[in-house]
Image (cartoon, rainbow, N blue to C red; front, side, top):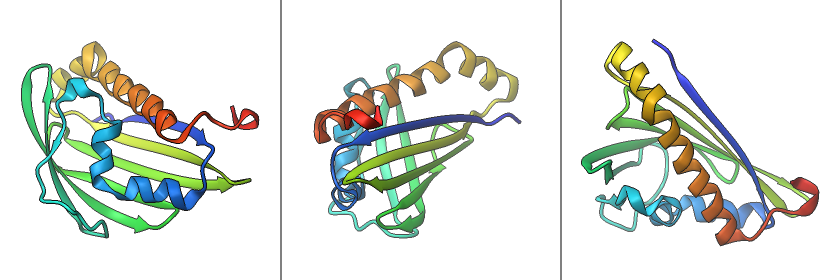
Length: 157
């Protein structure tokens, strides 16, 4: 079965420790998630992020309520963490978050490997709608990250 991969890189003009701290707080996920998803964390807060932390969410996808449970598979502050879907709309969701420091700025790298259920029907749904939805979500996320941390350093654009 085919995997889809989304890759995004973004520079922010803030130090690595500050950027990683922001992403370490599960509550901030709501700040960078599009409002049209109706995203809500169901796990009681505060959430201590570490290997094996599980977080439950609720969102709406085109009017359909969806529950999603993720688990932190890798936790390597301040350079990387990986979350995977345990339950939710995908057959597979594996999101690697990487952070690299250079000259006081931070490069944020997202690599998402995902797979839809339902075989050929899932592949058609990805082509018709889901692939564009995932792109839109990460476009929004990129803009919100820039809003939070400021524009990218000129030399990094």
